Image (cartoon, rainbow, N blue to C red; front, side, top):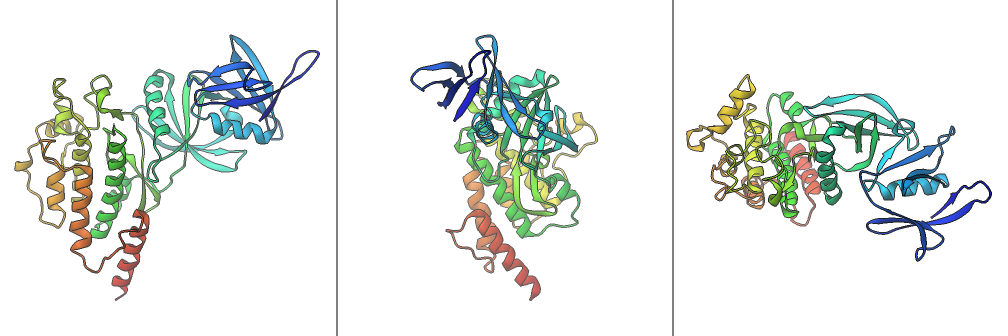
Length: 380
């Protein structure tokens, strides 16, 4: 990868080399002229000409601004390599705003159009004051690689705000989906919970606790079709060893596990708290109502805090053992993600002999197989 550094009398041609934690620019990798450690707080300004062609970048090195000229193709390649390692600038030259997709308590999401790639993306906008929390979320996203977890593209700093570019998922939230259906089939319950529990199992295997699992944080890839879901919003996600210092009492009232809402620093909670949230989510899917009802935040929070499983009356259905297993107050007796997945398979696939899938099939292939079989049953 080649760049040109322009000087008054003589231009210099340099190579660009990159290691796991370092960007090097110079005549050779052994003797670089510029050493630039990766730093998400350091800014790179990417430049684009009037013909919408990339033409290099600008960065501060040792307190001085340095400009490096590059070809369009190599600049684009370098942008991809350095994503998440530096903050980018000049976003408004690359993206056109379309409209606001959603607004949360701490951020908003905008649909944007990349004028170079001619593709649409989602852009999550946060205040600069949330930068430390954002760095945590970005670090987590960089460490995850799962087909049901949204992927980020680039990070920009503009107007004292952080702009996180991610894949665009336009099927709406699981919350919207559940609100717009009059009833739900066992098949739909199965494919929704299978995907969610697979994601949760993956996170737990990586050592993470999501801590904010709820219908609003699950996206559908296609409107009114839950066959492919994505989990989003890892702003509260943490390692078990970090929960005491990163918002120990967190989550959304109505979906918080007892051990989180009644946090005891001498007995910190673990990944099992996510399973309780999944149980509350399953209740919402099965019955169409919240486990903890209330018109006001404090009312929902109080019901959540006072939850007792033995006092709950659930309508009998095939999924009741799974629901109760995930809602156990004692996290040590609560189902794990793997156990919940196994029980889900036993409840649905084993008890529905017409729904047979090959164990070697991928999760999505199983869903497709079951969908085809369901359609055949309906036709008959």
